Amino acid sequence: MLSNKELERYSRHIIMPEVGVDGQEKLKNAKVLVIGAGGLGSPVLLYLTAAGVGNIGIVEFDTVSISNLQRQILFTTQDIGELKADVAVKKLSAMNPHVNFTIYNERLEKENALNIFKDWDIVVDCSDNFPTRFLVSDATVILNKVLVYGAIFKFEGQVSVFNYKGGPTYRCLFPEQPQESEIPSCSTIGVIGVIPGIIGTMQASEVIKIILEKGEVLSGVLVMFDALNFDMNKINFLRNETSANVSELGEYEVSCKNEVLINNLLPKELNNMLLSKAEIKIFDLREPHLFNDYNIGGENIDVENIFNNPELLPKKGKIIFVCEFGQKSKALVEYIQEKENIDNIYNLKGGISAWIEAGFGVDKNCFTPK
Image (cartoon, rainbow, N blue to C red; front, top):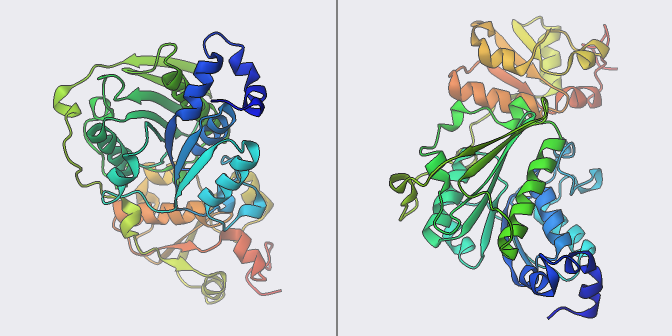
């Protein structure tokens, strides 16, 4: 039963014949689990909360970092270092006090997935890696839960709905999990900030349609959106019984579970190398205008150029990757260490920002402390 305050809050929903009081009560009684509170999770959580989905679960173990803020619109600079799920619930509860939230401040793994998923009606995959997507897919198939999928890459995004009324599953579209080392992530390639907003909003729309049982749900349809050229295409696909029938969880090789040991250099260590004229090669991954404004020497290069031309990496001496805050360079070092098996590659921890904070300049005298 909706209270008077709820009737007023959701009045723009209720006046629609497709929703009405009955539909709003369906939203209030629904149980939706969101995997990830980052780029995709932010708009999904904001719109489901505003719409009055009464029970929302959030699976998210990560903390807010400065590199999140370009796209993860739930967070601000003041939230850096805080647990994402805790910050999200505080802000979402202020938006709509009629929603009940359940937080899972833990990494989603094979050992806990089924137990977490079992009490929810719909699962929304807002994760950012293939191992998690396949784990989520298999767990929802085993438990017969509807899965709303979204993925983003640079200027592009995808949306679909799986396990809906006997329809196709994620594995009907993507039968086998690729090796994590074969797939560059958004931390190395990047994503334009608005794309998770567009794709996440589409995911939220599908969730609401499923709850209301209205409209054409994207079951057996993959929507692909390209913001750079403003193209939208639909691919229809069928259920494949061989791929769809999953009875137990497998192995998902979640790379973050066994993190690669990254070779990090502190600004002082790099400065000492430069002063001693050690044999090093610096690759600066920042945008050309930032490199031209200030740099510590080396070559300004695009990440994709490194991916496509690994022969550019020298065989002798130390290779140092730098970026503005050390996030992109760290991800690239990890990727190359795994894929190319190169051990003379280093990340400037904290990036150019840490270099400056350590007291080193950004001009011709940059190699001596101020």
